[in-house]
Image (tube, rainbow, N blue to C red; front, top):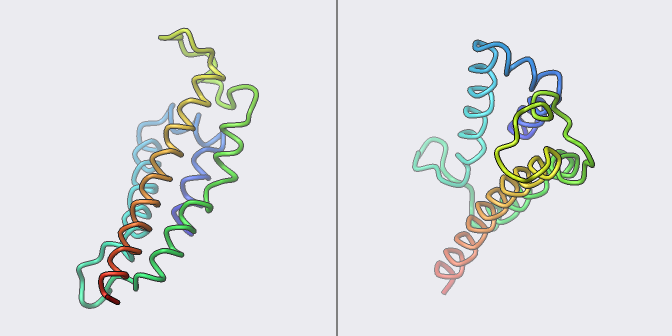
Length: 134
């Protein structure tokens, strides 16, 4: 999946730090994640007749794929014992969380939203498929 590749690529410490230091690169970073994300959800939400949404059964498998595709990235962020970004490590703390705990919490929250989104898509596809077959 191109979205997972783009998203993971920008989490490499060198690219992450470079994007923080360069406004044009930062804009490119966000657009290179946003546009593939739109393409990623198109098969689930399309209203187009030329590129229609995928069937309900396929949508369940597709949503499951969305859940597992980014697991390597999240594993690195969640199970890491120290922050992988220098800027993040050096940033002033605004809570009692250590930089490592804050990074883990941020990764858990982002992965949680990813899982909720995928599960909602799976649930919708399942129940719509059920209604169609009824």
